[in-house]
Length: 118
Image 1: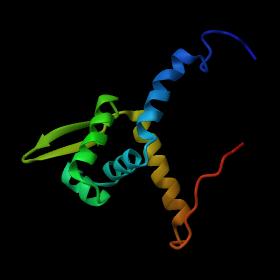
Image 2: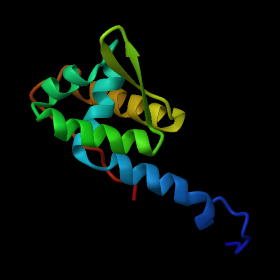
Image 3: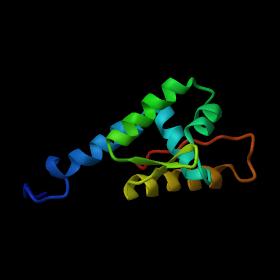
């Protein structure tokens, strides 16, 4: 194994990804991202109703996702609409959704969790 500082495993390259994983690592924030990715025009009201969480709690989680550059919002008429702006996280969330749909198709009563490749 090389100790080359330009290695993709160098901490300076991994830190931005670690920050993103930390931001999406909370179960509520991950669920918010899944809702945003799965809905056509997800507004904050739709999100907090789907989560069955108080609006201030959802707003705090959305603020963290916005601060880290993972989501963006825009005002459309009278609604604030959210989207996933980080392509890496968007791809990751879409993969999670596909994996869940694949693992539950035909098995509504069985919920599988990802298994570690190690």
